[in-house]
Image (cartoon, rainbow, N blue to C red; front, top):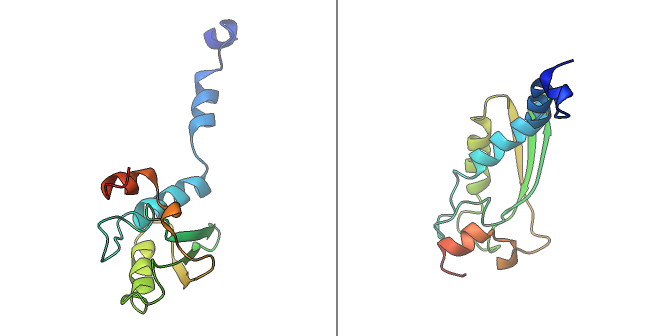
Length: 125
């Protein structure tokens, strides 16, 4: 019996294992960090905190990521090039070998999708 079990506390090894994210979760966190390095060209906030990322799915076995995203407006001047920029950033994440970025327009983006951090940055809180 370990000292931790005797004290009624979880074993340190078991506790550290419970805190460690799975490989899928770690990869997802890395992807989110990569997405946070891409900024909307008209707004000084990253696309993740702006709420432009609508979906993110990862297949760790094939090392593929699918991302659904939108833009602040359908007529955005970067609509043709921005998905490629996002895809390039995602492909830089270790453990990702392929990615597909799809622009979606439904539901339309609104300010309600922005994170609190984005609202603070833009002086909206």
